[in-house]
Length: 474
Image (cartoon, rainbow, N blue to C red; front, top):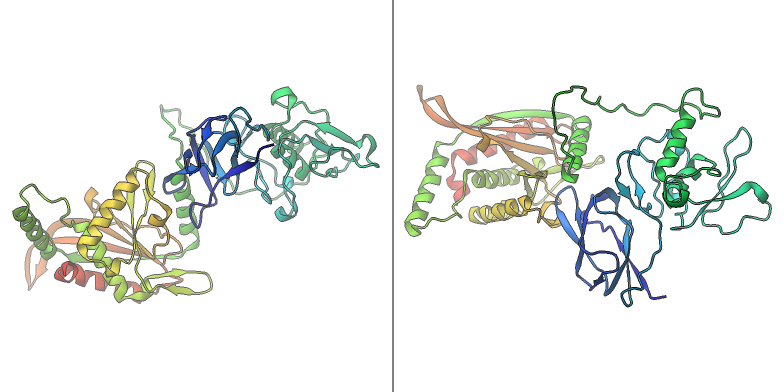
């Protein structure tokens, strides 16, 4: 048999645990060359391509396009070295990941992983150490020991082809997918006599889920002891108004999870300051006029107010380094460089690409980098190096007319700056009421890492820079 090379879900970012396999660019049996894109994967930040690891034939696609939450390390397919037509057929069909109605598919879990299966009773995995469970052999039929009367059965060795000498009739060969077999083993279920919903009666994950739910139903014979209830999900909307449910993108799903965790775990506090930006607007207009004079066709590279605010924030963080920090649980990590993440809205959701060493870069350099990052973010072309490892985040909703915002932290960062719209309103200067251009900046901070005084010092430094923009333009 020709050599086969596994195509696995790669760890595309430091904190990545899973991703969505959005599309296959090649079909099973197609010839592929090393480095050729064969699949597209969507992470919480961007869409990337999976490349063929070697020349050969795409022999066995194990994870269907559209599968969500594919764990890092999962075998997606095999590339077989050899002529077309020799494609391998190892491995069973992909499993259903959600409820029986979901129709999505997931791969066999990687070594050491345990699929708890949404909706399973807690007893299915209670007391079982994931690292003590050997991975099931792909495509092998299950051999499950029948449970003794009134008790929970003992699992047969996974992948065994002949029963132990003392097993006798207690072992029954049951066709089952690897995931269904592993779930049954963890729950001590007897699959003998079960006709599955798969091809030729093959037991699928949904069949095991039904068995477990039936066994856990009130009054069911041999029902397992009650386990503590899992946290309740938000109630589903009950309105019968016409509506459209928009499926969650990977980006939206991960953002929701992280923001909920941040709000629940980090003790937020908020500070607000008003900045007079009349001089900033004047300097910006002068720079734009000079650019127009030098290039009548116009120059898209003229820094915007947002560019100025980003550089001012980076300089302020350098001046107040305790704010340029992260909470580790054991210490407050103070960074020597300002890598400022800037929120960008995309069709798939919010992403925060990072301007590296923003405190050492000129305003034109920051303006050019922000344009590149925003363009790549909206086109789904960001690479992990573009959005990993920010030390602080800035979110600007001023262009939408929002006067102020109180953003949620992006852990483990200690703070996030919110920038509002520039509003012309009455202000008192030198004892006289006059019209002034004012901009509100807010700070959301993690009180475990930052004290109120540190937050106030950061806002004061930022205000001074915005009100004296020559420091930022220089």
